[in-house]
Length: 326
Image (cartoon, rainbow, N blue to C red; front, top):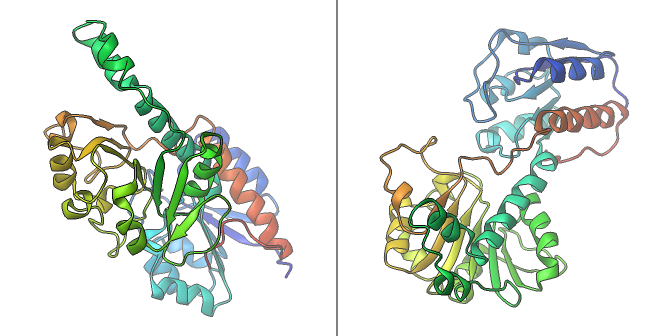
């Protein structure tokens, strides 16, 4: 249904030029901001008195406060992850008021999938080892690297958490003709993919050359990849995580790498973040770390507000919204 002039609250921190574009896109509405904004998507939200006057919350509002404010009819997150909002209380509150809850999966699926593909290709072509040689011994390790490279064609990959990132990665992997398995709580058909339950995926780990973790943080996924589970993987398989660091038992991962059970690990997320300088993961053999940058790209902020403004247009005109959760 069509919606009249709205009050839009935003606690996201953007550069001045991006904020100007956002305000211009909201010119038909009232735009308000809290005194203290969220530093990043991962910052813990705080309650703000101004939110009580809003119809729309954009950014990272305090979920407990939103529950108490029936005037808030739509919450749009600047992140793809929504762990703190993934509760019966929050979802129930939004449903009971006929509201909408959306996230920014459409902003982050492409960069995260590209990051995973870069990890897989860099791994298969021995790029980390070659770069390490360049910065250390400079010994031109021809035989050791040339004959350790491999092709992705025909290999098996299991993707845990088959959401927007996983679906985009499947499209990118199509030319490599891999055997792709995806784990999802409620399996549904997807072209070119064998979609199974997490328990069924666990049973298939001995067949996997690559194990990809895009799981969100939750009580259900906390330390999902523990040592006993990692011991089930094919010897020398490769592990990748762009989900959340809390989904992995990092000591178990360290043991799996040191014993050779895992051939390598590529981590964009850890627990805690930033990863402390004294963490053993920094020096664990064949453990490669990027500092939670998988979703990053130079026009990230512009794409965030573009995504929001598109959904604002859909919200006000009663059209189906992008990345709708509730």
